[in-house]
Length: 369
Image (cartoon, rainbow, N blue to C red):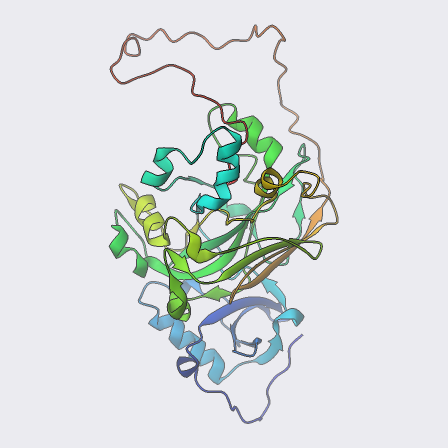
């Protein structure tokens, strides 16, 4: 519930004077409504506007006008904690990367490596995920059937406001409409098992991500720019106990790099979301490798996960028990390995230059992404 301001005198300056462009989306009796977040943490709610996406596509001026219009004539105002917060945007696609080196180092070292593979330092590494299962910042997360190792991943998500096609890194900044907190929920046992098949991740990831609650424009963060990110604290906690923290500025790759790489010889649609990958201390897998599984157990039904980034609020999710069992179509493989794949006999594979059919070395516990 929210209250109207009635005829009270508005003592606040215009949003342009605030230098504040932070949006939320909330459920109201009239349906979803956008809101602008004031410096005091109170949201002023729009009378009719319910989507940010129509205001994407320029240099941010349309979002500034939208914020000023809501502020000038809000339907009401309410503290964020009293609102039913929804995901601020509805992404059309999702790509996720891995840009925080300190997050990945424990898994690399556990595999006998002193650092990451050269390719990680040469180009961004990422994969496609499932935009259809992105949920809001207060929605619960259900453990997928067949998993006993549910994990969270604290990330930054960049929302693309303008299409990008083969954009160089120095031309990618103006493609970003805003940023949100992103949680890439991960079923580690399903993830590692399927990646034994030399592809993925797939079902270990595609059951759910969380997004929100506050959509922050790049202009809002300009004064905090540092390194390849922003000087903003990122923290994770479970059941009120802080698990880890990092600063976005510790990223090895910038979002400009990620957008450029994703768009090269390809197309990144407006409305897409691009994830940074997990920050240091941003998932159980990393923390259990750094310390011990006993100190950082996998998530269980009833656990309360809180993921926070300065100026962006926090994701708060309750873990739910599985509603179903494992996938019922799994086939049994004979113990003696009788069901072997046919040998490659195509002439074009035999002795083809530059082609190796050798089996790559297995990394027992790949980093969370």
